[in-house]
Length: 472
Ligand SMILES: Cc1cc2nc3c(=O)[nH]c(=O)nc-3n(C[C@H](O)[C@H](O)[C@H](O)COP(=O)(O)OP(=O)(O)OC[C@H]3O[C@@H](n4cnc5c(N)ncnc54)[C@H](O)[C@@H]3O)c2cc1C
Ligand SMILES: NC(=O)c1ccc[n+]([C@@H]2O[C@H](COP(=O)([O-])OP(=O)(O)OC[C@H]3O[C@@H](n4cnc5c(N)ncnc54)[C@H](O)[C@@H]3O)[C@@H](O)[C@H]2O)c1
Image (tube, rainbow, N blue to C red; front, side):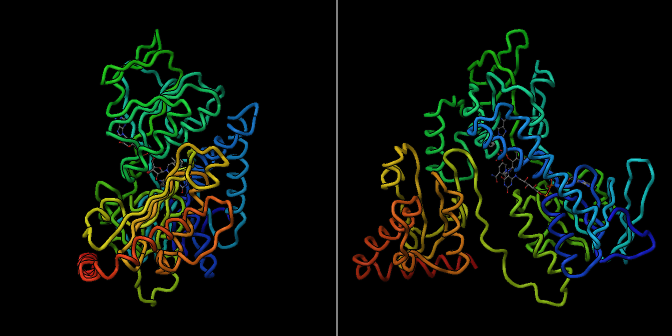
């Protein structure tokens, strides 16, 4: 419902109605609690309005022959945003307050003030506050470039015409997805990445595979450099390494995110922050009793499913406070919906790298080499898994290839349930599916492990014990 009772103390006030905030409000309502949900912009947050939904809609429009791809994107976005807004307005136990919220120093109950669009200030009293204010794009000005040319994810989906030439600054998740979409739409696409490889927090083999696949589709890479200035009359982008890109219509800045901390009153409320955002644990708890933070604002997760997963734990912590807070969050897979897709789950590549080599093993399968890759003329794709030696316990898995975002689910379940390649070896996959890479990785593991076992036993056991102790 719209509005709240200023004299009543609610179970929780949730700041931000994006992926995290909606999880909290709906989850607490499920436990029978009345919750105030404050939103300064549009219900649905970044995911619905300027993130997941418009980007995936554009990827779809680009291959489905839509005559007005951006019109399609806005239609899908607006339909969903309207539905989510309506759902919140109509919900019996969710009290939607429109305006900008800030914490105050008042506790017991916590007081949150909301600056409404009409200039009035509302006070909301609640036993718990959950900050789900999200993040915004890192931005910088480019010498000589007008606001019409330079866009971020917040303005990209307002375009009307497909650019003839687009430059994507940054070689992370947003750029790889948008490179795919704009190539499919017929644009000339350039990626400008400062680091020495794309998607630098992933495995180098992931970077080189997606790079080769996108280059094959005509994306031009400018790696290890950045954009320096823009010459408006010739519409030429000048890069730091001396490269020039002429005839540029649009430049998308996608160089990472920063938490939306400004104006939240965190200092007044005594909430600890770092460069990454609000400091919060795996239950969303901050250093202040009764104040939680979930989603991009914490920097702990930068995905919708991450905000959702930690959000559910925060719901439990608020609704069932007497239950012990044990257990880490479940394995969280990530996916980039480029073509081919990229997906990974488990430890980070650097965490795997830091482990004793004697206690672990890497298996890799080139996806063009499996039968489905052959029938589909697949040129680039790889599946790799790092496992504990002998047990086959999965440390990390990464896939670049068709259906990677779906196949990774098998490894996610395996990590959650402690199923190793030793057990996955017996699993039967439909022929000829891309999921057969999982079976082939398990076959490689079996071939490599069992014959070597008598020779390696002691070294392997020492390595495993060392690794397990190091991860305590
Ligand atoms: C282009 C792009 C594509 C993406 N694609 C994917 C994807 O495919 N899959 C995926 O999992 N993730 C994706 N993401 C990431 C995903 O959108 C975010 O991780 C997710 O939206 C974070 O949820 P959140 O609740 O933390 O923040 P948001 O969803 O951003 O919600 C925060 C809300 O808080 C509101 N707010 C802020 N300050 C205040 C205040 N003081 N008072 C009241 N309200 C306030 C904001 O208006 C906003 O509505 C993508 C992101 C981008 C940019
Ligand atoms: N499918 C998904 O789940 C999905 C899709 C899109 C975005 N997202 C989320 O949104 C977040 C933001 O995405 P993003 O792509 O903006 O950030 P990112 O952190 O994924 O990538 C940013 C890239 O920009 C590069 N960079 C930094 N400064 C630069 C400069 N001056 N010039 C050139 N390159 C520079 C970095 O080296 C990095 O490779 C991601 O962390 C991701 O979690 C998720």
